[in-house]
Every structure is written in C-alpha cells, then in structure tokens.
Image (tube, rainbow, N blue to C red; front, side, top):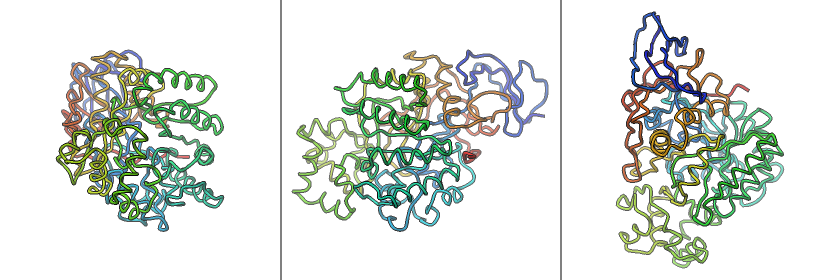
Length: 525
C-alpha cells in the first residue's frame, strides 16, 4: 500500500521537457512509482485532474536563517511552493560569533532587520556548533552557506584594512569548520559592512578553502550599477584562479544610465563558461531591490562603533556631512527619490512611502528624514530601492544559467517588507511565463527545481522521478499568480493547490497546515 497516490496528474518533471500525464505513487517520503495506471491502494489519494504536478521549488537565494529558529515553519515560503531553502547569502550567516567581537557581530544582525535574533553566543561560536544546535524540523528544508562578512567580523570586527596572516588563518579555520559541518560553500556581500573593506586577495584565499571541499561561492558583487562590468570581471577572475563554482547573487543592472548592460555582462559570463568556468546566476522577478536602509550610509560611518555612529548621526554638522557624502553632488530628490521605507517600527506611518513622500509627512527634508528614521529604529529600518528596468530583468531571467530566488528579508512583527519574500515563484509563473511569455512553463520549472538542485548538490531533489524525494507542488498553470505588492506585501498567491514535503501534504489552497516536514540539508564532504 502506498502512503499517497496522486492520480491523473499533468507532470512537468523539472527537466525542461514537455509535460506528460501519469499517476504517482509515494511511500516513506519517496516517489516509488510513476505510471499511466496504478491499481494499488493508498492511505490518501489526490485527484489531480486539471492540475500540474511539479517538483517542489528550491529558493536559490534566501535569508531565512535569520528567522527560522524563531519561526521554523517559514509559512511564507511554503505558501508559494518552496520546499527547500538556500540560506546564508550575501556574506551573512548566523555563525560564527566570537566573544571578542560579539557586539559587532550582533550589530550586523540588528541592522539587517533581525533585531535581537542572536541571544545565545555559545551556540554560535563556530558553524559546527550552530548547526548542531538548530532544531531538527522546519517547513522547507534549509541548506546553509557560511558568510564571509560574519567570519570577518568574528576575526577582525569592523577593521578597515587587510587581514594579517594570523587573521587570515583564523578566517580560513572558520570556513573549514563550516565546510566540514555540511555548509554548501561561502557567500560574500561586498557592499555590506565589513565585506566592503575586503579586497580581491581576501576573497580568493577564502574561496580556495571552500573549493578544497567541492563547495561553491555566492557573491553579492561590489557594484551593480556604474562599475557593474568591472565587478563581473572580478568575479570571473576569482573563479578562474580558484576553480570554484560560483553563483552571482541577484544579478541586476541598477540606475537608468546603466540599463542594457546586461547584454554585456551575460556575454562575459558566456565566454567564461565556454572557457570551462562554472558560473550561474540567481534572480528575483522585480525591478526593486531591498535590504537594510542603513546600508545607504557611507561605509566609513558604518564601520564606526555604534555609539560613535549614533553620536555622528545626531550632531548637526556631522548629519550634514553624512548627507553630502551620500549625495555626492546630486540633489536630495535625486539621491533619495528611488528609496522606499519598507518597514519602520518607530514610524509605521512612513512604511511603504518613498522617502520624498515620507519627508513631507515627517516635516523635514529627505536627508533629515532618512537619519531620523534610522536613529529611531536603532538602524533596523528596511528599504525598498527602485532602479531596474523590465528589459534587463527579462533578459537575465531568460539566460539559461539563471535560477529563481526570493532574497526575502522579513522578520516576525515587521510592518513592511519587499513582496519578493512572499511571492517570487508565483510571480514568475503567472506574470513572466503566462502573461509576458518570456519563457515556457517547463523551462521556468527547471530554473526553480532541477537546476538549483544540481548547482547545490541535492541528489534526490528537483525532479519528479522514481527514487527521488516526494517534495512536490500541485498547481494550476492557468491561474497561479502573485497577489502581494509593495503595499499589501504579505498576501498569499492564487492557484497553488497543494505543497507536499516528504510525501505529506503541508499546504492546501496556499495555506500551511502546521506540519514541519523539512530537514537540514547538509553536504556530505
């Protein structure tokens, strides 16, 4: 007897090949039979007539490690079809956290909208201790990267210099510990504190450690606007010199004067791949990005002690200097005109407003409003930043080595967030596949399933195939669509009938039922 039989399904299996119709028998969390006829009985049967069965979606770029100890269900991911979650991106992971630089380490989390999330330093002293201390069960199954910025903070704090040989050895030791504990690889966030103070030599040396274990590197590049081409070239050079597999995080082209440069960046990546380098991309399907609003501060101020930073942000002459550095000759409207306050706990009336709009409500100019909100929120304000065009988004989306990710940044109690955390996967299938026809449904499913499974080494996930894990989505391709937007940011999608993890239904009609069937995905080196 089967545990579950899905009958009359139109199967899009994750390979990119055309759909076919069949029944699927599931036992002990595995797909054990796919056949036009299954006569055996099952404890549960789902009639999938009129629906399409796909592999469960794999979020190739996630920050859910910030919240999954507090909210292990991660319903916002399950309810858009995500069954596996690649975490620890953009140089930020939940370990290591050293005693020497504990204050600095906790501050990084606070400024990324996860205020107070790190309370127990002993469980985070290194990555292996952190992994062992995690719960056993989650909603989607999480996998992990170790963040370079977190490692650098643990060894050097916010030092604005090259590491000494001893400090480099300390960082390498942390990376080795993480790789041996089951991390997928190392991530970099080269626009964030303290990654912004590292150089290419430092990145190269740490990539070599991850590469020794067959690990990967994911890179939030140093620049995604005026210096985009140089940033892509630097990534290619590091991959060439280390041999590591690389994923360029949330590849995008920012600012109107740079729009169209994706033609050149994708040509560069094509040439590198033809050379034998292993480079992939991930992308969220929006023209606006999101991160902590504090990331807009000049890097020399971000590296200050928090007390000194706050003192500067409160001093009239220093406030003026901060805004002048940020504007670099541009007007306040030009500098702040594309920024939305994603969520402000101290100023809920400003959440969802562009900063020029917020300034009118606040009664001060844009620069003063920006600094006031950050101070009142203790740096935890989130931002939504507009600056991309649809042509680049679609060009990157259709590039054959691009995977889909949410890059969602959300925390319990938030009163605002980027809708990508809740709606990225239905948005691709509804708006870009069905409405805009930028790619076939089968190809989009491949980008969401077998492709990230192959890139990140999940040998039993990503396909509807006998012997594979029964992590599946049952949906209506004609109605699936995102409902969340920048105002109604956490709305559930339409068209998702069931999500199945380990052979059990965990979501019905886009609503999670409370089951925690996900398990940690650790690489066995």
